[in-house]
Length: 187
Length: 149
Picture 1 (spheres, chains in turn red, brown):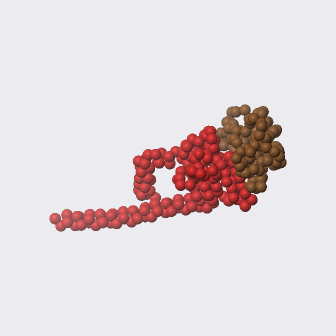
Picture 2: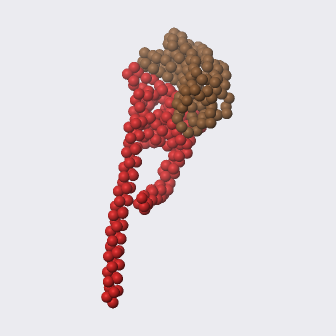
């Protein structure tokens, strides 16, 4: 009986140790996860500074620039003040009051001596220019509406974000799996 | 690259509207003079394995009393890989209305027409290239109200 009692106590001690170690490991993994998230945020902010754009990477959402860009393509933007807006450039802009950025080409510009510029855009695949898309009464776009100019692109990769947007269950599944992976990963 | 033009202006409400007809003769494949790519300044063949298409556009650049710099795209065309890289277009009318922001076309002696293109790769950088050869066009001092277009 005594031997069984001692064995029982020892096993309880052992469990405590294990529980303590697991808690430490858990904290470690959570901190690791936090570090990864902060690094990612820092890289993103760094990109914003280097490119001068508030959103240096965007996903093409519509087919209005086909055959050059299709839904799901990824665009890399810059928005440096030293690069003036000129016709032929592909700009990503937001219409006042609307969240979704539009990717089209500059068709017309009128620039004053002091650098103030107003311009008109049109999608390659559209028959008419974008005036119909602008706000009521707005005839031109200005520098403040521009998110950035497209300088480079990679096809298809952005499809993942479109899928996550259209199928929220998919987004939660991806986030859940990512979180699980980081927490469980032994390194 | 060569362009020839003929033109006249017509007043529309408050802004000048210009009419331009033009010929474009261009040999994009061998246009090494104006070619500057990000990768290699000596690229002779523009339609290489990484070029999906060229977006060509003819733009008019000029300055007026109202605006120091104006640029208007008069015509554009998408040239896919595999299309004939030699253009020989005659008597083309501008695809888009050539409206000025004001009345700066009348009597404007110096409108420069240039052919440029945006290289769209399969993946990578999107450069804008200006073709060599541009044409300077003057607009007349008076409006034409009788010409039909």
